Image (tube, rainbow, N blue to C red):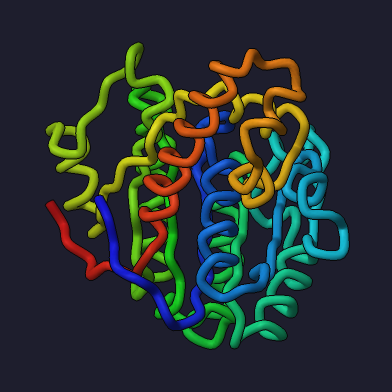
Length: 265
């Protein structure tokens, strides 16, 4: 699904009740896309058990709200535990109303954020969601799809004017195939008034090094064959790695190209 260019600032939120589905990588792709369009990094915020985007872009570029693993688990039972932190986040959003924002939420945090937003209603920092693009990441695994559905439901309730997208991460497609027109997906999209888009699988071995070494994706995409050969790849492998990484980067970034109209299946 290729979308047209975006021009107005938006708040891009990545969420799911489940961890390990690709939220942080998708957020990094969105950051790279926005950097390509605007020439500068967006406001980057992460709420996680550990700093991830902060380790990639640096503490000056990323506001990291770090929660302990125990707190993350407790939030599932009591989403009001971190209201003070959400208040700080709200102030940050208000200070950057004219900027693009990328917000990466850890597992089980979408509900907590939305419960907090409900306290403010339309007067909250995100209003009813007019400038919000909410992305729920999922693989084809049943538990993952359920978690993404939950996240979309929270967003639909608390930010009804937001644009909601189910991002189908094709990373595990061989094990858990899932098509946008699958009955379970169509039902989910209709229920939550959401779109579906494919987040393509990357076949380049270079991506593993990008993730493991916490490289900026925009830097990695700009590297020549010699750079990857210097990382220990055979030259033919490095040539293929660059071609595949470039192709994947273009396809992945196209997902974040515009604000599509909400189109239930």
